[in-house]
Image (cartoon, rainbow, N blue to C red):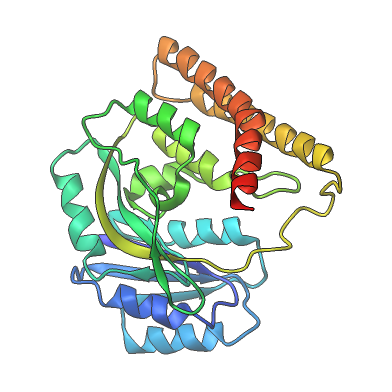
Length: 289
């Protein structure tokens, strides 16, 4: 098996047909789709079993209980048998050439461990809009430089939905956890992947559309009511992310000097997120009035 498409899902009945149809329409045919259902309570199980019966490349796994989104995503990835793995959303839409375009990027350089494409957005009505992505990493850029740039800009989307060597992806698991927040768990996984010293390749061609849905009301239960309290909450969160980034670097493939420089860069990122980003947000809000 060449490629595993890992799809975690929970109550995805509204858009999962569209997502599966776009994946099964891939021009590259040597793939499997592993669906890990996080104990859905809607018609998702029936839909998935329908697709499994229709196409032998679809494998449906239902978890006995809801284990959380990130554990479910890990289960989908680990269950795959492909040489390469791509994790997908249960509501995103893929260009038929997605795998066909990205797979050759690995064959040009055995050190490439991740290849990704540009993307667009699609809303709940099906309206597509372009992304503003302007940063694309290529295999001639040194791994430490890619790590530093990623830590600074946090462009998890679309990189986490890229095509990866399965060994790289699985060795980076599991997703880390926080007690209350889920923010930045995907970023920490990407930093772990990049810490292996892999090369990254990309294409500016738009090859999938990420579904934008209403995600209001997702703050943690102890979210402060005051703006200052919220800023302090976020600061403590970013401080913890920096601490975990340091731990990732301590186990990375980089040399001692590179680790020290990357830790300094991570500290700069913390300061920027605490000072520059809030000011920029307020400035944009005033301009929008």
